[in-house]
Length: 117
Image (cartoon, rainbow, N blue to C red; front, side, top):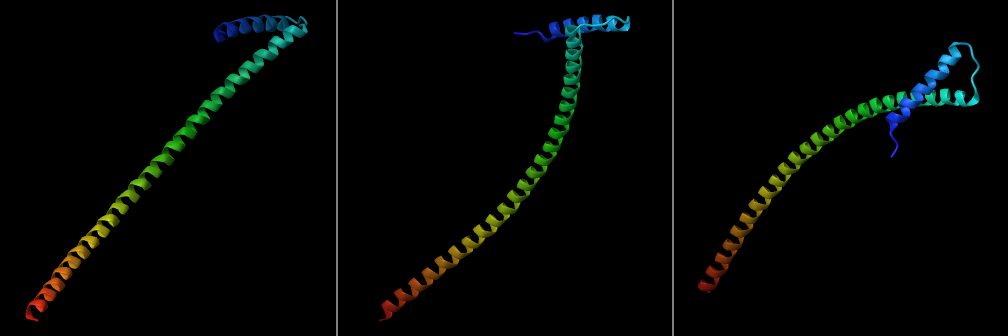
């Protein structure tokens, strides 16, 4: 679409011509002032872009550290939850064994009582 390099080269050459004219003490026209203003704005935008990119990089690094901390917390929660489920499963297994043994014992007592009656 639009070649930034072409535009930058053109603007640099035009700004250089205007600056040479100013340095020689000649007056400049409104169009030439606009070229200098445009050059100043492009320089300003370039510096803002550099600053923004460095801030974004710092922000990304901070976010990465925070996500790592959250990952560690989730991993810790996963381990704790797994331990709790293991304990709960063990309790349920013991209860099921106790319940089965109790059922067999009561059934045996009922059958024995029926045979003796």
